[in-house]
Picture 1 (tube, rainbow, N blue to C red):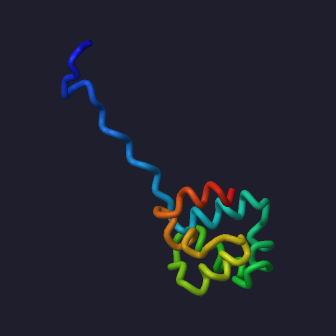
Picture 2 (cartoon, rainbow, N blue to C red; picture 1 turned 135 degrees about the vertical axis):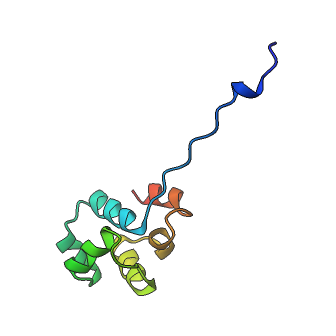
Length: 92
């Protein structure tokens, strides 16, 4: 058996980081909904959904709860995507 040298190891690649906006867009796309359809389901205007999806405004607790209810997921999946990656995959 050959001994391992320090140069034999390669650093792990970092995981992809998702923003709340990217998660909203992914969930909406997976459901096959337009922004207008999501707006109807959650009560947030299409304009504000666009701003959220493009990370131009902060998500906030109230909006996260409205979106989570429409997507039938826990609000943490939208607000804290870096901690909830497994749940996002399951929701898909």
